[in-house]
Length: 110
Image 1 (cartoon, rainbow, N blue to C red):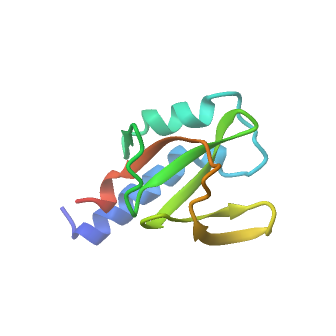
Image 2: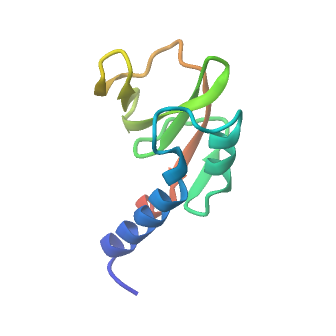
């Protein structure tokens, strides 16, 4: 068994392989598929209701479907890809975001 950092890197690589099909931002998956894949991932623990813990991911609804991921960087602050800004942005968690659930990346919380 390697160091915690090595193990975390290996798990992150496995997680990336699992969600590779969702990597394009073109919504090439059907309704509910992204959420289902995240819930079924062996590397993620689903947290409902969301607790907004730094280091965790949240999934929000866009056009009625859970399809937008953000990383909680600190209490009340998220990092995510913004279509409006055409880049990754970091800002306060918008009050109007419809958060479906939160995910803890198991490797990051050893």
